[in-house]
Length: 208
Length: 414
Image 1 (cartoon, chains in turn green, blue):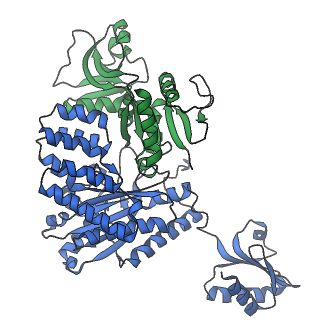
Image 2 (image 1 turned 60 degrees about the horizontal axis):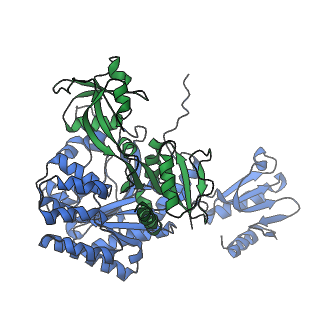
Image 3 (image 1 turned 180 degrees about the vertical axis):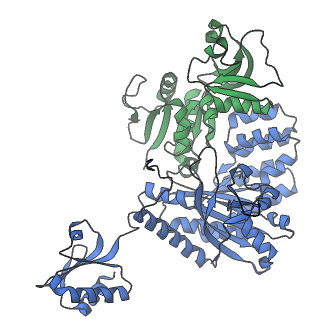
């Protein structure tokens, strides 16, 4: 029997996911968030865990390189992967927001410049509002953009809001709530139905 | 000078082409056994035809060219539509026309800008509307997947009308409908409830839509669950249609290859009846898609009920390679003849005879440079001045002339 492959996001979110996995009763040898290893098996080799960059998790799952992925909604939305999104793990909660300088309400009928790490999410949000925008794609420290005049606003994930506050920005509009989700490859859902369902049920009972 | 090392064409070497060719041959053979005949459509199509027809290929994805008179043409973006048009206009559907095709289709997308062509192998059955036809088409898809050696595959069967009927009970804007469709499409049971609650929809309809994504799995179970969300008579008859098709697939003994997926929505809006897609191990996308489209032809002025499906040939090849099913495909030749210069005449005459019988034969003189290369064949015959020897899989036999070689080969049942 081929093992089912589970793709997890490296880095910050890994810790709480590993805790949840431990609770399902599946024990993965040597699995902890500080390990440099990228592939782990459980004791009876029926399950394989791989660690990949968070934004790549949906891609691995969409292409069938992993059957199941556990990753934040932000990365699922940005990658626009064609996968099933079956479970909310209720960890890593935050939200997508539009932020900018205080007393600087979002104007309509005028082209806006938005700096973001998430161009697809940004495009989609402003499209539904029929608002013309120009996107500046950045890879980090997005908060800097409005301060030095690179953009009018930013779109980013906001957890506590303290990074925004420290840089003198405020949330002007919320786009969507984010939390860690379980996604499944469409082919695996059909061809490995029993294994996938079993794992989902294990996770569900571990969350209770 | 710029060197073009990036090659966007997949499978361009000889062995890859052989694998592809044998795969296509196997599909063709299977389609023929169901009474289907091969056709082709023109590579250039009128852009106007596609832009006028509702619910087909995205206009941005089509590759346009302009001819000398200034008319806009597109490279064949789809096969179903021109075939349907041809059959409808010529009135051929009255004879229950069954056709298949193996053709390249051309589309461009922003995500995969370097992948503009793909090969589709598909079938269409025109002029007949019955559960028997539907189940036979689905059966043909299953049969073909079995031919190719896939051990673990599943066909998801749904119905285009089921979701549409539910939507008609509501008054959604096109933005809301898009959002709902993508929630159903990704079986997002987390967000679908809050999404529906904020809309003004009757309680029982809302519950029905909410349950659609999870109406998935064992057909017997799903059919039972689906009964509870039936809103009207046409949904009842849709469910009955699916039950009929399933019963017929049972008659073929292939009910285990099927799962029911009532949350299946196809991007092609022209589907009106049963829809299905096939999945195999280790490929994330469906390798085949199809369904019934009874109303497409009305845009050509006449009713012409039809059903069909198409395999994505490139995905099939990828799947075969992933699962190691291509090892027996694309062998170099049946026989290699190596000969010493003194017995060249006998060797070449033998090659002539073998080729006459249809064997693939390569001949090399032992004095040539090629002889040391790693050439692979099922058999090797060595003609030297001392002896003539035939090497098979682990066997070695001697022969004295071409007639004896022939009879040895026939015994080995090449």
